[in-house]
Amino acid sequence: MDGTTFLAIIGGGPAALMAAITAANVVHGISITICERNDRLGKKLLATGNGQCNLTHAIDVASLFGHFGNNGKFLRQAFNALSPEKTMEMFETWNLPLAIREDGKVFPASFHSGDVLQTLLEQIRKHDIHVLYNWHVNEVIRTTSGFTLINSHKESLTAKTLILATGGITYPATGSTGDGYAIASSLGHTIITPHPALTPVKTVDTSITQLSGVSFEDVIISKVNHTGTSILSKGSLLVTHEGLSGPAILHASRYVSTNDTISVCFIPGENKEVPDKQTFAKYLLALAATAGAKQLKTLLASLPISHSFIEWMLAKLHIDQNRKAAEISKIQYMSIAEVLVDSHFVVSLDSCLSKAMVTAGGVALTEIKTSSMESKICPHLFIVGELLDLDGDTGGFNLQVAWSTGYLAGLHAVKSIDR
Ligand SMILES: Cc1cc2nc3c(=O)[nH]c(=O)nc-3n(C[C@H](O)[C@H](O)[C@H](O)COP(=O)(O)OP(=O)(O)OC[C@H]3O[C@@H](n4cnc5c(N)ncnc54)[C@H](O)[C@@H]3O)c2cc1C
Image (cartoon, rainbow, N blue to C red):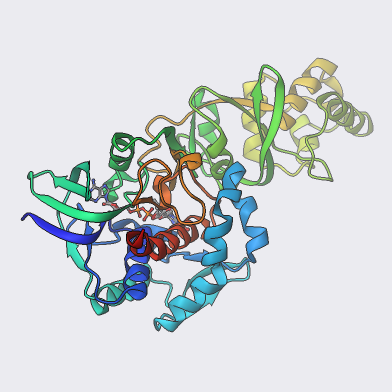
């Protein structure tokens, strides 16, 4: 099928759907076409929040920016245009009751992601937005009057204005395979190397994986490099059969690459700081001085760590856990302190693409107008959602990016034609 439309949107995820609905609300009766490579829309949306869809976070706009690393300020105008509060209102107006959990995460009241998708699809139908399924865009050509999209069957679609909403490169089974990077690059954009974020990591030394299933309530993750260490995250950690996971690791993964070394402090100080190793060793020695007759494993059991961790640590350090605390040397207490407050792990993010919740990196933000999501390089091209160099914390922040950037682009894509 060769065809023509006023506004073409490549991708059928949350950012695309919000953009299409917004554009249709601005100018009624305008021809809008969504090109989706899958045989249905919103495949990744269905997988969100373990199938429950944490669609946003009940938080004021001023507190929102901090959840996007260094790139939060790029989103100021998008969040002002469509804040979490307005997003919630919008879904409720569309007859989707919502539930706000105590931690601020917002879900559909049914806790079924399918209901969020159905709500959006009803709006798509209501506005007669045209959807081309199994329409895998391979190439976009800039023409004097707009854009020509060519799919994998060499069919074409011409459009006056274009929204690129192909998502990131993670969870590729949902259709987000990173095609948008090549398309944006062919239209003149710079791509910040995409890599998985919000992902468990593998540890190159697999010894810790013997503790698979063991969790820690409070750890501090730091990145280690030649200049020292910098704290990346604090929170709970879970050991997996391949390495490390849990909220603290998911959050830190945004800042690490394969072969980086991270340090885990398993026993943070009272003020949630990483204790000094020497001071911690002295503390252990002082404990041993008051209870030298106790077995070492019993002495260490007074610390907030599991028995299995103590066993694993002492085996790794070749220290007999049944020896008396008084028989352990200063050097051995120093090595125990080191494992407890500064355990180093070389990590790998290879093969994490299939598991990562979001992609860090993407289309360079400096090339996008913050007020509209329009390209500064290619007029009438708009770029939205996870395809941009944006990634947020867990908690509904990534979908909020999709809603807010999609909304802004939808508003301006139809207005841009007056120029
Ligand atoms: C398991 C999982 C759970 C998550 N849970 C949450 C959560 O609870 N809360 C939250 O805020 N975020 C969550 N996220 C992140 C969130 O899902 C994404 O950030 C969001 O879906 C990005 O939306 P998007 O529209 O930019 O891209 P996507 O949702 O990735 O949609 C892109 C669409 O483009 C299509 N496409 C790609 N290339 C082409 C092409 N060449 N031609 C045509 N179509 C194409 C794809 O098939 C896809 O349908 C989760 C992610 C995962 C993987």
